Length: 282
View 1: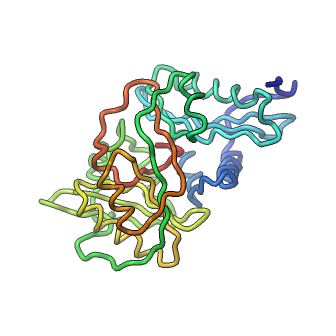
View 2: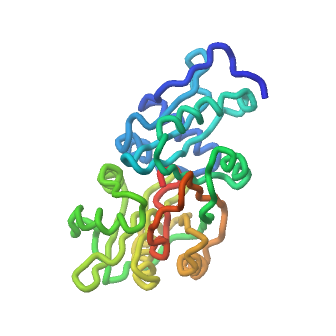
């Protein structure tokens, strides 16, 4: 490894530079959502860092804080022509310093698992991205998510994420061109899901549910809005019911990440995670 160019600097990313990082993620094959950047930036405007050479961004990373206890790292990308020069480790160090003291999560590519272990991360499980073809009938039991109060959605969501993510969830559910459904059981929210337009096709996330039947009904409602596919669903491999859902709909694995944390894996209800919200923000 050589040293970065003398002009190399690391600083907080601008909103426009985050758009560029999303374009890089698209080139890497990560298939970000069309409107993800605006939602991500609203969640934590100070949570993004750029590495620049002579004013040109050549490295990116996100270090999004969800309060004092939890943070998530993503968008760790270096332009190919600047790799192996120490540009990446500089933005990495900035991200880790910003989230210092928190339990930090990430979804890393499998090839970098050992590298992340050297920074103190421990493997919790793997997430499998499944790809399929959309189109189905909307089940009558689901309801548009808008009929549920935001507080009820937030409370339900908090079972499946390490902390309450109010700011993120408000922005996520306000994104343009999404479809979101919930299902009620015993007068309470028993599951909800969102589908959004991505660089390629549509991605479902999150898909949280009390049980497999609830997840199935919400899944069918969401894919009804994607008749021309492709559709993608990111599934924790430790949730066998979620794996079965993907296979039942003839979805094929296309990508895999390793979910890692710097501290103990959070006590979340993984049995109810049928679709991960985002590899970038958790």
